[in-house]
Length: 204
Image (cartoon, rainbow, N blue to C red; front, side, top):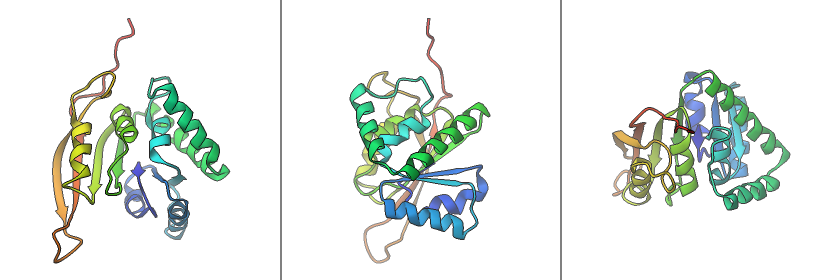
């Protein structure tokens, strides 16, 4: 998964190492460029969807039948879906099918998130915590002293069935990347890993 994928640079650079890359970004022009970049680089295992990650990510990665959001969130998703182009709706359904098959094959899932300075939407964090088979998150932050701190806290917080469902993560490695020489700013790449195996609550 490549969340906030932009023109697909990160996902496409890693495509040869994975069965499939699914990129999501709100910018339609960026997604169109991502699709062109996939074609130019002969990358046939990449799917890109133009949509707000906070509205569609849960429908892609959360196991079918598992309660994910309140009815108000579901209504927001439906409204967002109604505004999507036919092409993006098709790509969204394709992404769902790919991950459904991946779960049935017991394939591991890795997410790369590269959000804007404001960080990840809480619905995205919720989906990442609840996603079965999601073993690692690679978080690329352009605001390591701001929004990243809050996002890391929410990803790693102990499980609470209502506010913080799913198995938490733990940071295992961080690497600062100086992309802005002679300034105080740097990017931060952090790897998060599940702290415990995914467990299914008893229905009894």
